[in-house]
Length: 390
Image (cartoon, rainbow, N blue to C red; front, side):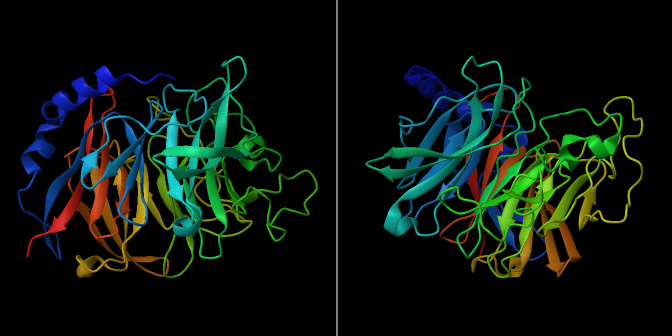
């Protein structure tokens, strides 16, 4: 991995011209939703495949770029140089530098957690790994790997990699199925196999230790980090700030993206049940959509929107959105707002349709809604925020 200052300079100059026309035209112009008018305001531009955002106490914003750079926005300005201290990263296809979250007690311990695609020693395979480090003097210090998934593959897709802390300080990690084909005996697929991390959501202490009350700690042959299983590629993850419930979005195949309430020990069905079909051919994958002992999604998208970041809104500026969750869409180029009553969806609204691929969505310290847009070809894009129009 190498830093290329010249590339950053060129990217910054070209960024505004490479935004999608719809997003470029929307900058600053009032747009309307059911409850609010809002405008899209640029926060940082010239970013290449931004994947995740993390707001730190005091106002700093960290942004991961999938090609292997951690960027810092301070006082409204994107620092010219990336944050130093990252480990070696296997960049390619869906792999690279992925999620970043601060420790719940960051103000005291300065710890940040980062997921990435880790290369094997000969760089022929990769897996999902998580480090923690102290963010001090604008660099990563005391870098420590706290988790490495038993999900190695030559392929470079379906890493999962979303991170979230609950109010008790437990760290949840999503791991994708690494694109193992859903063929043959579906019940023997790795996502259904508790002896691997493929297609799982995990739960750890903040130092990587396994909680003694994890659901499969005492199950022979099962990996003790597993919290739930039967997932394809979970790309959004939150612990709800009000209810402490764990929610995740995951990519289906052609059709069948899902929003799920994640509960300990539950099986979410992939690939035995689901709502999608094989790419291009449209042939069936699943044995059906329902199976005893397997969970049903709260929401299904057919056709797929390629769900990405997930956020629960609790801010004051958009009071009509309180109690809603927001789901980013990549292929769908959309931001979806869902109002939930338990596991029942009572409102659904699409925002920012066809204005760009929404990779991540977060609530800022100011209560505004922040979005990271990406471009499939690696052209520079922006992080923006939605501000209410009074």
